[in-house]
Length: 274
Length: 186
Image 1: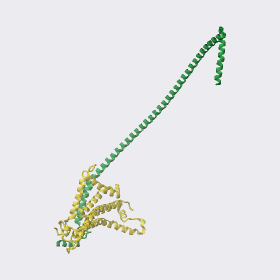
Image 2: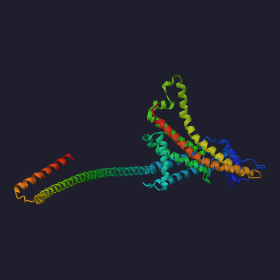
Image 3: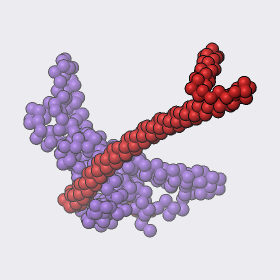
Image 4: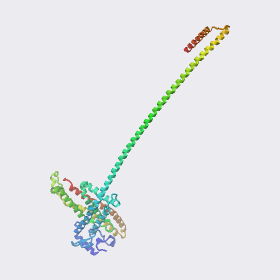
């Protein structure tokens, strides 16, 4: 087997409790993958498991929607019905709710793509064999957050012009009086610099933590299989199951939160100065 | 295992989980663009078209249903009106029949009454006439008998017919007067 600890499955170590062997705790190294191709040491090109999962995931989404929507029927089949309900949920439940039907229609494809993309990348976490949430690598949420950020900034410019953009971003409001400079400074940093960061990190950190928890309980279930530890291993295994179910929930919620925030930002860009 | 630890050590110091390596950014972007391209350019417009068609179909169906409903409503109203009219007619007919019946009965009753009175009157007249005839016959007979009796008693035939009948008549008239006064006082 591969010598890379990140590629080692929990039960492939012969390390157990009472064997004088330390607990192989999950950590940052669990999120580093030896490239499948190329070399990650330098700045060279390489290709690793999360990249594979990302591309595979996008093919799965496209495949799913292709199967459902390529030749859609007025009276839908089962698959089309499922896809439609997902599409409708995002369109009506997220975009129309936040941006409104008239202005929001343009952004529906983006938001729908974002939701299913993020959800799929999250779902990899509990899909057997893959078992790694792509979004727990900061690069992926960051790309998505950047796309939204660029869209938001350009929209605000287009809608309000340069001064308007500034007012929108800083939350210019005369009635604040003496506090205005302070408030504007805070708003400026909060909106322009912190926001894209938190947007990406919120998703990243959730998936990172979720994956770490799953790893922790999975590894512990194996590690504790010795002597009295069997009982604890059972508990740990049950926790693994519970956490897997919980992750399934969190994955959907995080995808939803991500697109909801996206819509809120777009709505803020389109809104009149406040 | 050893090489792994070396790899881990080497990577662990260098890698910050919040700093993305650019190849991953590129792959992430590519993966997203693939999905976005397919969904935005082809699949979502597809489904939007169908959803629109479905909406129209449903609205068309609804319109049809509404038309059918209004028609049914009008038919129902018509039917109700007809029914009410028929009921009214029936009531009117019944009323008429009742009235006719009542008049018929009244007429028949009046007729019966009239006939009865006629019969009674005829009876009365008959009785009256009979009585008169009987009375005159009786008067003659009584006169003859009384004359014969008186003739036998006095031994002489009272041949003077005129006087005879005058005496008898006077006698009978007295009798009659007595009878009528008796009847009147009774």
